[in-house]
Image 1 (cartoon, rainbow, N blue to C red):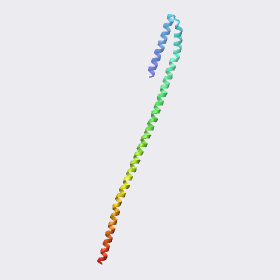
Image 2 (spheres, helix red, strand yellow; image 1 turned 120 degrees about the vertical axis):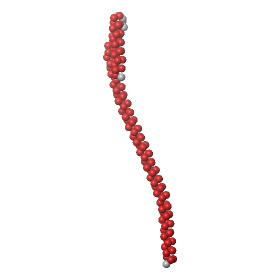
Image 3 (cartoon, rainbow, N blue to C red; image 1 turned 180 degrees about the vertical axis):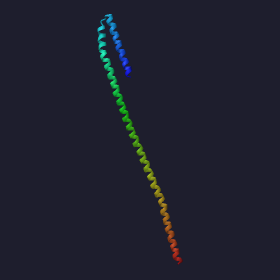
Image 4 (cartoon, helix red, strand yellow; image 1 turned 180 degrees about the horizontal axis):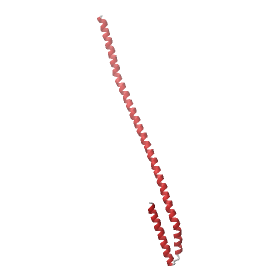
Length: 130
């Protein structure tokens, strides 16, 4: 980029110098204007090219920082979504465990009641047999 701009600026200055020289040799009334343009361009063209390169450098840094901030922001968003999904999955698993425990505890209670009834029946038979 720098080389291209430098080459364009050099070509522009060479063109202005050649035109100044040619018009001076022809002694035309425009030769003073070409000389003024050449002198002005000798100062202005390099300054404009330098300013453009500085702007491009600052702009690229700003774009780079902006890209980094975007990457950080999106990474944080991804992490937050992932954590929410993990928490949701954990909550669902806990809920399933609770439901399984409730379901499995009901038959045990029923079994306990049946065993108690059987014990009472056996005790009643034992007492009758005495």
